Amino acid sequence: MAKQPDSDSFMDMFGRFGRDLKLPNVDVEAILSHHRKNLEALEKSARASAAGAQSLMSRQREMLQDTLREVTDMAQSYRAPGNPQELMTKQTEFARKSFETALKNAGEVAELVKKSGAESVEILRDRIKEAMAEIRAGYEKK
Image (cartoon, rainbow, N blue to C red; front, side, top):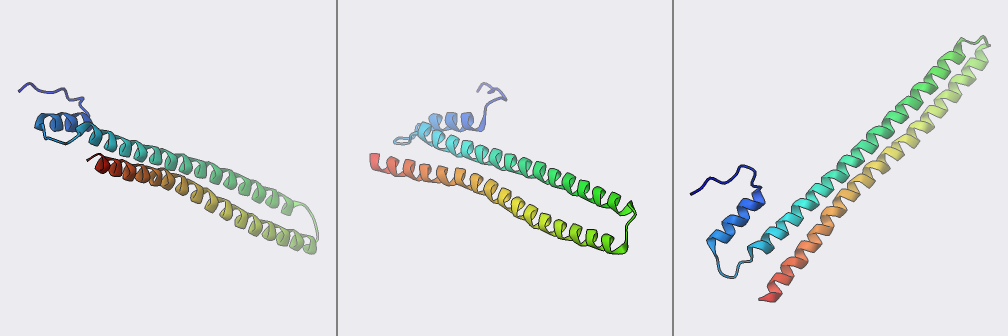
């Protein structure tokens, strides 16, 4: 038997194996097509997850930069001469802004994670529906 090239994909090897068996009433190409679509859906879902993670990391970096800028501004304002009451007012205002920003950022991060996860799951859910329809159609032919 001649050695096959190393570049054969799993799908190519499985297809060749199925055709070599010559089983009656088995549509190897339909099986391969079904699994190829499954793998494509998994790949698409993984890409959506990766894009969501990248978007999340980018947004978190922006949030951190904004926070560092605010802390720097606050530190510089403390150097300015002023009475203790003014400093206390500035501290209170900064604490309030920080808390509000943290809540807003946490909500935004949660929404990004939710959206990314939902998109990935929806891709897989759609493929499962298609697969079930393909299986039903296969049984209806017989």
